Amino acid sequence: MTEKSAHQPGDTLEVGGSVWLRSGAETLGGAARIALLAAIRETGSITGAAKAVGMSYKAAWDAIDAMNNLAGEPLVVRASGGKGGGGTTLTPAALRLIDTFRAIERAHRAFLQQAGAAIEGFAENWQLIGRIGMRTSARNQLAGKVATVTRGTVNDEVQLALPGGQTVVAVVTHESTEALGLVPGRDAVALIKASWVMLMTDDRARLSARNQLEGTVVRVTRGAVNAEVSLSIDDSTTVTAIVTNESVDTLALAPGQHAVAVFKASSVILGAGFGG
Image 1 (cartoon, rainbow, N blue to C red):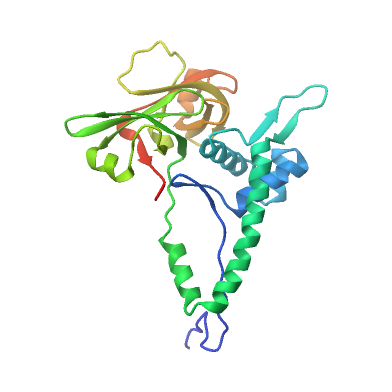
Image 2 (image 1 turned 45 degrees about the horizontal axis):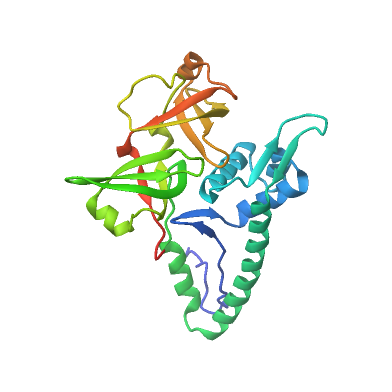
């Protein structure tokens, strides 16, 4: 028996594609994340919005954290309970983002229709362009501006200023500094895996780790062995760490508690926008 090919010679090729908004080198959001924002606007609830777009509550919060971090300002604001019952609202920046995305999406569809009809081989080449794109698995993607670049004998120390005033320090090679065009004022993104982040509750402790970001615990999600702890560093920046459940209990980590995210400068990967 022969397997039928997904594409038959007589089939008509159609041009496809999707719109993604980017912040520097990282993806801020695509159709799914914009749909989540729109659903939050309609429902006034993270739970209701997640259900409306077919997303888990945790996945919705992860997407919101990522968008806030990369936007450099709050997009989603969760109000505490009270006379009005609290709820979740979008900032003016988020509302503009939805409108901008919808307008770009309409123009994008029109462009694909015109290009597909006018350019020979456009469909195959467009698919290849999409495959070339790369995403990162780093849980923490913190957007900021390069504050200082200190030249060393072999490596450079780069300080990235976050929106809330705290800084992230990375140690990179001279070649990386030059290749990424890292100079003061340049937009960049710090990538840190959640497993590289340690947490402490006493900010008076002396540690050799160069990065010590103070914040407030906003979520603790327990697993069988480890827990995912999210720390709000400022209004738009969240850092997530993966620690053991035992550590959560020992440090008494719970929402509202002050804590410090600790990670080495050598654990930070920097990214900068292409052609920017």
